[in-house]
Image 1 (cartoon, rainbow, N blue to C red):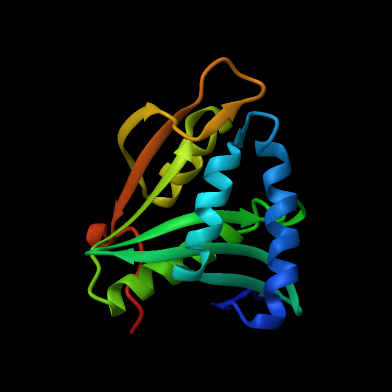
Image 2: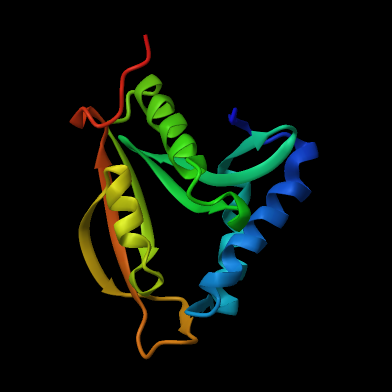
Length: 164
């Protein structure tokens, strides 16, 4: 299976949106963002970059990111549920690792809601939990409390191969 990761093109916007909505459906059984957080994020979208993972002209994954000092910060990593566990998330993160290297960044970072079960997924990719705290801006749906883990991956850990 060949997956190409590249920057989002204007013609990709609808497909990337559909993938994100499909991927977030399971998460909405645990939490949802507050209306205030949604408004705040909409105002910031123009500052972010976005990647898509494409297989046979079909968008199967997407991630937003921005550079914050010496790190690339991931947001909204989404893989279409039909394509999960096929290396799409790993391909998106591998692309970001190379992007970080090319920009002189030493780490990748992200936040994830603990109750979704995604912490172990990101740990398998090489991230580690730096801190955990009660989540702000989210409303619990299927759980009593919502906690957010801040995670980082140091790029030079040897986990990701260097492209030559």
